[in-house]
Image 1 (cartoon, rainbow, N blue to C red):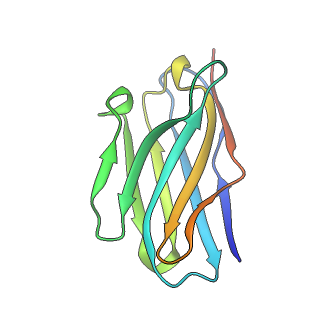
Image 2: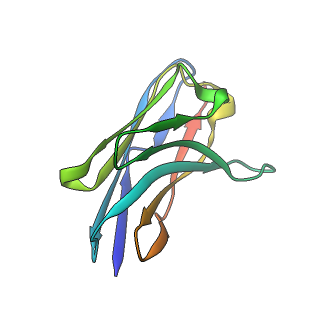
Length: 116
């Protein structure tokens, strides 16, 4: 069993910041990559950012320069620092972890709302 615990979502005004965290626990032998997806009403699920165990990162163009992804391999935790938030960033953000030999796991989702 693998458990993912997300935290850090909430309501923030445009221009504000939030930091999302996702901690993986359980039968984890080797994490290949961790990332964040988001799902907004009426839109398709979108990969926002990802980081491999070796530290390679991916950031989607829509948030490049505003969001930063980082990880702590010792804690099996991934962070998403979100700055200069815009109303269009409003979505449910889901943590995703790919574990070698086990596949992909998802967090329960955390709501991020950007509104004045």
